[in-house]
Image (cartoon, rainbow, N blue to C red; front, side):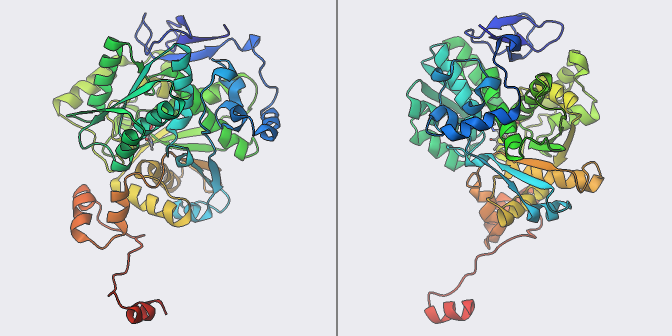
Length: 459
Ligand code: F0G
């Protein structure tokens, strides 16, 4: 087999068969990668060569925005790959948002991953994760979730009928639209007292004890699917590498996957430039920000100072600091992919920033007013870009792609509170979080049920 699993710790690098179900290296405890013996695989000569598949869209594997790049994630035979039509997403040049963040026209692009079948980027990863689950004969698949992962897993299991889905959610910590998807698609839904970090810890224990296939981004196969978000960005830019990729940071799966994508593309000689990576935390869930910028934690050729991480989490527990942000998808204080993300930051000369609730909501309103809209967590990327432009880290003319990870219809309370007239509702959703202004609000107009008055109003 030309694909295998490999420990990311350069001092260990232990390898394991693709057919093994592992989440960490059994020898040293580090995270695992899916790796390939590229010399024995038919590596494409250029990225342009993927364009030949555009003419084969009647074939579901060529239609899929994940599997049309199969040569770059060849851990399973193509005919065994799971697809439900994921990855038909759009890269939009957006001059309105460019103006908002202080950039010149033509220089800012939004990648709408919310256009996936379940409404978020997770479908890229779930296509790959459930493919591996199928390879190993899994009958049940589980995840912890703040919403999007659960909707995605439930959809893949519901449509493919390959596995039964089980989702772990924290009480009161899931957006209703997402909970409704999990329930509607038939997932067994386990609600626990606690937040995402608690649910993540429990699902790992339960999966291990019962041999249930785990579909969180700790699963290295899931991240293989998420690499394709970058392939599609390059595809939409006609294979020109942008200067910056800006992405929200929660469990740090995307940033890790993007880093791996660029490491591999570079190694394979398919790109000659590497974009810089900006990862944006919410201020209320800023572990990466603190560890990277305040504790100076680095990849350091794989020699990560784990004592620093342990001390950081011990202090967090001592202060009982819990993640808290309106951007529910990134309300995570213990990112499971932290070490892989450090590798990505190292390779892509990355930066990490944090943004306030106010900055997130204003950015979200601007994406809505100028584009297709997004959920609050996704808008962190635009808010972070604005900060980086103001600092002069991102140049006004540099080409930037902000990844919008989830659909506008997630967390509608935040949107309605921002735009609406109901002061009490506003206070309960946003005011209490320190959001003081709604500069870009589009308020509904309240009018009597009287046609003359309505006509007067609209004249
Ligand atoms: N954006 C959205 C819309 C998400 O749903 C998530 C994660 C993230 C960003 C963070 O991604 O891990 O790549 O840094 N959502 C998880 C969930 C927690 O349960 O749906 P990351």
